[in-house]
Image (cartoon, rainbow, N blue to C red):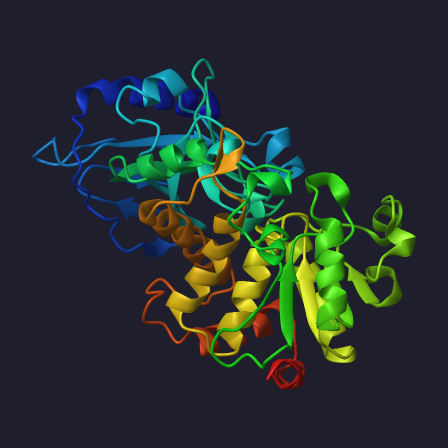
Length: 418
């Protein structure tokens, strides 16, 4: 009966959205104070959520200051099968006060608070990013991690008691709108003829990592040297041979799958050390973290030069290379610039020919790696929210220790890459 009552109250609250005005301003969540083991109170200028038997919805004296809603996360098959959190808010009602491209703060009391964009499609965010999926016609919202498990990200285990209250509040009106527009303008070609201004190495997204602290000719990155699906493998394989790469870390494939590619047996790649991780870009989730550690240990155990790749050499490779760059002392600007270089190599193709990215597009792309690293480090208790001024080398050491590497292994990894 209590659960039915809570669902009824939630419906009334959703309808009450129409009474709350919307603006660009935002009042941040207050600190969480635990009064006792059975009650936690969460407050802002616009609402109070209590984990007692009642839910309260209120607004500030100036109702135009914030837009917010209190709802429930219910126990569904999707929570632990796919990691997505279904929030009991009717999507069309939500869209009367929130828009696609807004950034909202989602507070799950007792677990975590995340700032995520409101989007209509999984393709509206890059792999590894967190988002709020809102599809017109559905009677719920979904808090998701693209290619990841949001339930694990926020620490929601199988012993959790449902329903769980959740609060959503406007963080930044239209704060993700430019990113949506940028995504829609990006296109790639699989033909080298579409990139007359690029070198063969750039077309293959093959390059040496040259950021601060990294040794000359120690670490490389590229698109897949064996997967023919994007038309770059033979170039990447040949360039790896010229560079004398001895150890490859394959983020994308199992060994069996990689060996099934046409031409694998004849590749330079097939003659060298290779570790196959076969992970998705769920950077804050256990499968990726375990695979990442496996790859790092393989580096420690084998001689370089080293090359990390996935399929494009963009998402999984982009993240792992950024972490290694940070560990070795790269600056925030170096990390962002190297991450964006991959996108400059691939995008943006219009009418069968690449058109250079604008400065604004490059800036928006650089922001992606900052979000990915902030989110993944945060899950491990490492704060790099002030990315530009953080001690990224020290933070990354803490992050890798949290993932399970020993200090001696980190020291050996640094020695390999100097």
